Image 1 (cartoon, rainbow, N blue to C red):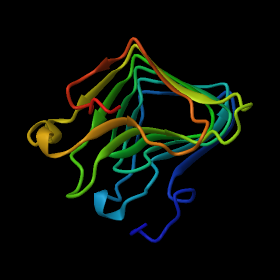
Image 2: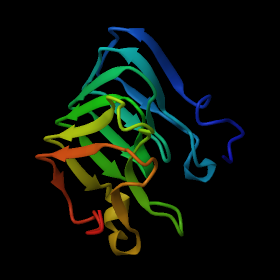
Image 3: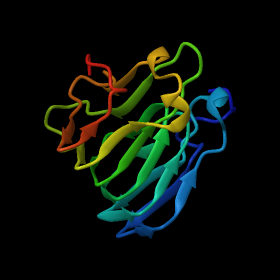
Length: 171
């Protein structure tokens, strides 16, 4: 990491139970040159984010622990936008891929399930995966994938979600 901090320690942190956030944006200002810089590391059980924004360039939304629900949120990132090993549902969200740095690609999710018996996964329902305005200008120069092969038993599901032409057919 170029910014001198670990992924775990670079974030705004929320822990506890029953947390609700509405109409707020969590933003990492580290920029793409600093690589991993989490906007939000979240570990509050049975928690809800509604009409929130999450903006960063790598590892923006760290779904670190517990059960989480995101509704009508906007997420902007380049690499592993949504990552972690928890039970997470994103519904009616807009997920925007940003223009990567030279030689990079976009990867929307990275779910870290290490055991087939874990009750974890990322579910993206009735949402949209789109290119940001700057990426649209150079769309053919970069690849965007729905998920990266992070762990052997990862579970990521896209249900009734619009995938724009930016998504590489390889997945």
